[in-house]
Length: 397
Image 1 (tube, rainbow, N blue to C red):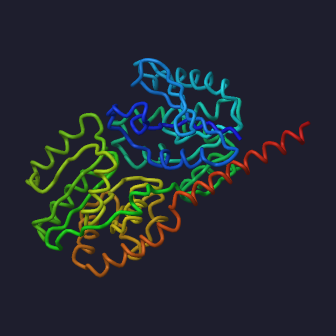
Image 2: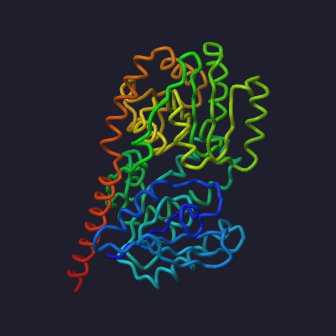
Image 3: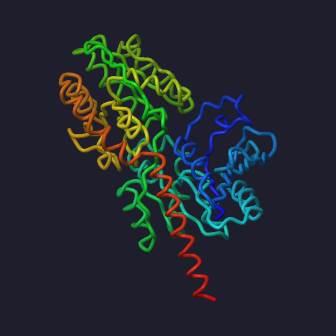
């Protein structure tokens, strides 16, 4: 079976581009699954990506995976509704002739190219753009770049037949737009580094809080800074580390808030870090804090749980499906610095509860996020769709 992924596969993890430093979203679920999937007998995996980082197209094989990176012009492709991407990807797909095209996400051209191609398609729902826009409220007008992805999302979800969803929250979204869709529930795996991580707990009087993810307004970073300023009244030696790729122009906004709150010395804005450094941050953390306004099934929560790091997160989107309150983590109200402060302080002041949720979260996450198990389930999804396709062709014949 020949599978074509259309996805944001990170160039810098490949030996061919090992000297590149892009500092973008690492998409770990791709790099975990691809080599394992390519090793499955009778599976031929092709990975297609589009990029402005290369001057010309690159087609090569590495570790049994066929890679196709398509160079794009430096033009505002979203304003053209990603027609450039679609045409280039479709040309590549015609050369491959896959049995199944797997598009990842709905926020760019990947899903659009997958569903509009002449081949059988499958979409993995990641961030739900319309829910993010709704969660931003009136602030949505400060993020006009979200509206084209939202339109693409609605178009592709209505037209695709098969979906992979990590949470019932995402499945319900699909069913609202496409009641006859086939939905396959599947969690993304967690990198092996988190399974083998050795924890080095900070002193109780000097806790270390970490945020890991895209540093953008809808992740609730500003709420987190205000909540942390209140936490410092009880734990003056606490430290907050914000880790992730910053939206353009957002770092100065956060720096001005730190100055106004007078907490610059207690907060580190790290920016993007390589995976080895991220793992070390988890190893030295007291808590992971995720104050998102909207999230579907954030991989960072699963990573923290696998590593045994207690989690405080907002009760939005699919997060309540990942965290059972006071059993595998602590849930708080979104947009509320007071609720976030209280959730953080509950765990900092109650080490028994912190240890309990960390242990329970670790056991549960390790059961469902093991790479080998999830890749086996993914292969079964592919085979099910391919068998159904063959049956339909046989019926038509």
